Image (tube, rainbow, N blue to C red):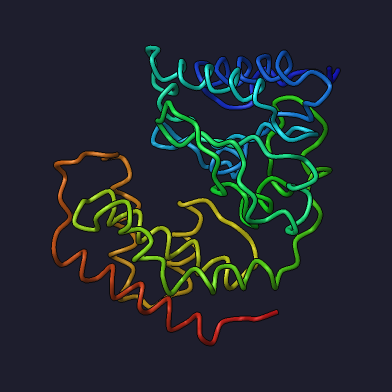
Length: 270
């Protein structure tokens, strides 16, 4: 069993800290010496999380998860959303194998994964990408285990830019595969995602939602400023299935995505 001291307050939220410490303690009991550590990536690592964020975590293990270990982990994540509280419905994370996490050679391999708000775990590649690795290496928050930068090798800037460039042309259709742009939350999400992809394309880094929009307002034409501002200000409205996007905002969002796609054709490549 790893002997590293547990970080008692990895986030500003006491309820969430309790859940993360429970996940860490559970992982220690289930994986024993196979546990490498428990970490946060995503918005909490980027320093921009709020009550509208989900909490992206990684439980890193030395060896592939066995059937018995999987059963224990599934029971925990099936139980958590049945409890009262806010953060019990906003956890999302994977159980990667350390050797697969270290380099991009491990990309495309499914890890045991719990989706945002779900009870049933899946084997999925959701967290197995260059973005999650970059955030973990540069900004990861340790719950327990060695420093996160020791777990991931440096990712070349060209890899980060190429990943964004490949994602941009299909970003809107990919988003519409799971949420409609006619839904206000989905429309705002699409605007923010295009800003984040453009930021990575031009900087080879990853920014939080708010930081990406702030950056975009300084690096795109003024004709887009109102759309970006409304997308960020609307964040406090959260998810509401009855909150419909204005048709003009949907049209502008699609136009903004086309603008970003056009910039991707001549964006930095090194």
